[in-house]
Image 1 (cartoon, one colour):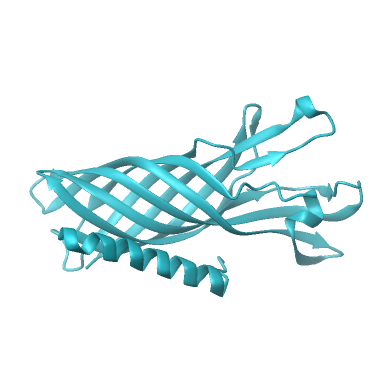
Image 2 (spheres, rainbow, N blue to C red):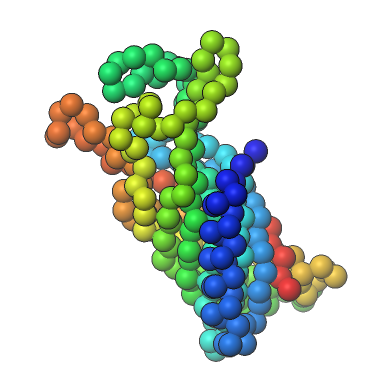
Length: 227
């Protein structure tokens, strides 16, 4: 289960309230929240690591521009990482545990263009979105098996200097179905692809020409509620 530190939750709440307050004078068409599952894969040119599945949550506001077009602003919390098997050793080649699950928590800000249009005669609406994203890391950790117990360790204890970057730029594309016109409850269902444009994870080898830079590719399935 996704555990959000109290300080992280406070930062996110403040961030979300500022974003929504800034948009309110623009007579927002929709304000709401979203919750879902993410499958994040840490990838580089030679392949990727086993994906990590976790929760994501956020708040959004959609401001109409003209006709079927609007601007969507979101503040989200994401947990990304990877889940691996086998033994892991630190930079001094000392055994620290097995079967590592590496987690990194981010506050993510998205500004996207959204196209929304009626879909059929049942009150459904289809929408698609595309826009840039900024992720700010707020915490990271590793879960390891040691002597049969699952223990939490700081990434510095496993990798030396923390390999996760403090800020990551990327892009988000998504499609969804708005059920508010067909149901008594204003719900929406959404699928997304998030890709990093800058390095999210750097691993430095003894050979300076063999450094590896990883970027996340994340798939989301989300359910939203608009007010």
